[in-house]
Image 1 (tube, rainbow, N blue to C red):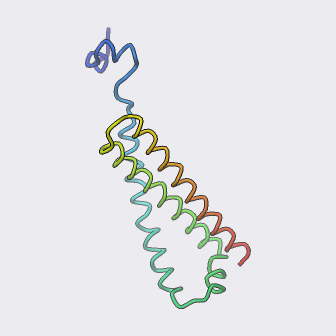
Image 2 (cartoon, one colour):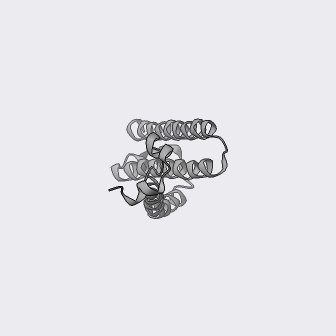
Image 3 (cartoon, rainbow, N blue to C red):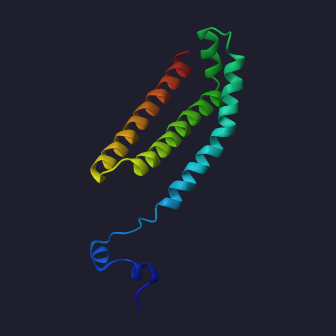
Length: 131
């Protein structure tokens, strides 16, 4: 007996294995989880930066040497870039015509977000450990 989703596919689609990748729900949940995580992290970051607005670099480095502050800043950076990558990916998939262009752009955005996140995290670690 053929399962219900198999019935909806064309014979060519069944042969090629084409159809829903069943990835949409996972992607949607990732966007929502990162958005919810970014709310308290953003509030923490805003209030922390407001408190440091008149500080020198040395005072900022001292603040960043706290393991809690460094960890929260690193988590904020990671969540921010991951959330941005997920959002830009959806825009590309929805509005860029042509499969090859979509694949190239999605991969470029992923690479750029990873590279920028790593750069930010390494910068935080350098300031936190060298002060």
